[in-house]
Image (cartoon, rainbow, N blue to C red; front, top):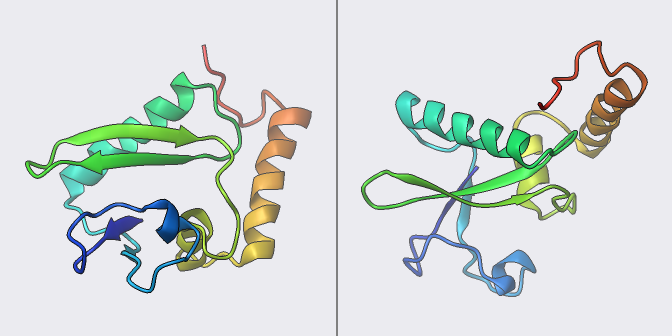
Length: 125
């Protein structure tokens, strides 16, 4: 998901945006518009950060890309909002998952990790 702001020129979410208090919220573009090489780098950063922080089941990784195209990891949210206006649920919806499917998927991944830890869960060591 890409946050893009043509109106204010800042390409970021403020508290007011996150809580839907402004009429001119930045656009959420999903899927994000990146070339394949940048997309590969972003995935690599996201997966490495997820593993390095010992995240489980799901997380939201925020990455900022500077004007030269260099990505910077901002934060990892190990329990991102699943509210109706949240970026995580927006991206899930664009991927074809309604709320029931999204939550079921998260629960299934946790179930696999908890009840069959060697079956399909990658060990972080």
